[in-house]
Amino acid sequence: MKVAVVGTGYVGLVTGVVLADLGNQVICVDKDQRKLEMLRKGQPPIYEPGVEELLKRGLKSGNFTVTDDIAAAVKASEIVYIAVGTPPAEDGTPDLTAVRAVATAIGKAIDKPTVVVNKSTVPVGSGDMVENILREQGADPELFDVVSNPEFLREGSAISDTLRPDRIVIGAKRKEAAIKLVELYATLEAPMIVTDLNSAELIKYGANSFLAMKISFINALSRICELCDANVADVARGMGSDARIGKQFLSAGLGWGGSCFPKDVQGMVKTAERFGYDFGLMNEVIQINEDQTHAFIDRLEKRLGGFEGKTIGLMGLAFKPNTDDIRDAKALVIIDRVLKSGGFIRAYDPVAEENVREIYPDITYVQSVYEIPANADAIVVVTEWNEFRQLSLDRLASSCKGKILFDGRRIYTRKQAEEAGFEYHTIGSR
Ligand code: UDX
Image (tube, rainbow, N blue to C red; front, side):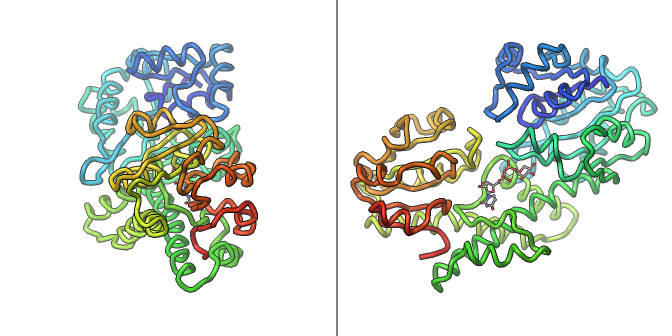
């Protein structure tokens, strides 16, 4: 099929390269010339395992092209994806400026049957909003359909999540439009949930809010474990073994961050508010998440007798492994508190350094994990990169001044750390 994807961020680019690899003719549209230049050279503007390979393959086969001409892309395609950002505005409501702008441009260009697919995460009612914009721009309502097809990919495993999704959600007013997408995705052999527009939009908010709640729940339990001398890993294993609860998303840690959960949980609360429902549970989920990070930093600060003049080594900066994304990364909260209290930071991350450098140009960045300890009073595991799981703790401890390890992601055992000579502190157990 002929497909246009507007927006080459995580969602747009991954959708584009995967659909091209499945044999469709894909045109990706972006107004950022720097991104387009990189893409034409086969260089993904984001760090995401597997994207470069698919991009190069798509460019070579001719199935994947890029342009800044949205009208031309729409006219050349039967399916047009809107995959632009919906960042939270000041009050937590998603900012739909980019979605509106793209819908306006699409509306002007539609001149034949076109299915407009919204992949951006948007509040309930946005499908209708896009439909209205298309009409206002003169598109013939007989020619187009608006479909909601929320994206569930995770950064770091975006390609495999797209190729092997748990489900594909398709929300549409007319059956024919939904069928068009069912055909496009047929080769993936994934379960398809076909529903109305509003339900599809709510599924995305509901899923992310539920997952964030699950993490906040285990994080709250981790605090109780610390108080009563229990072990959160065992509690999670025991709880998760109940198939009704499930094992995933029960890893206690520094809290959830990234580009989706913080934004979508806020979006959920605001959407509920708009329809007159006070979703207080989700406000608590947000509060637990914030407290979780600060409680851990409080413990570190107390152990060191304050951060003034102290050097804290950070293992990892990205909000999670296998990404350079630092949106709502817990590293930023730690850096902010340490610097404000007169301390210093030595940080290492395999890919996210450049992004953090833009915010904190003056902290010390090192090029390998073993360079962190020099004069560090304590080391904090912030991101559970695989390379940290496999390193030599003996080597890390031997050059660490303070020999204090705060494991914010529970990647080591107390035994391992203590045998290496570290004083070990972690989340959810003493
Ligand atoms: C998430 C959703 O999983 C995905 O379906 C949606 O499309 C976008 O949002 P992503 O933000 O890429 O994906 O990362 P994910 O792996 O879900 O992790 C989110 C956050 O939760 C991270 O900060 C991670 O560290 C944290 N997390 C996850 C935990 O603290 N514990 C867990 O058990 C799982």
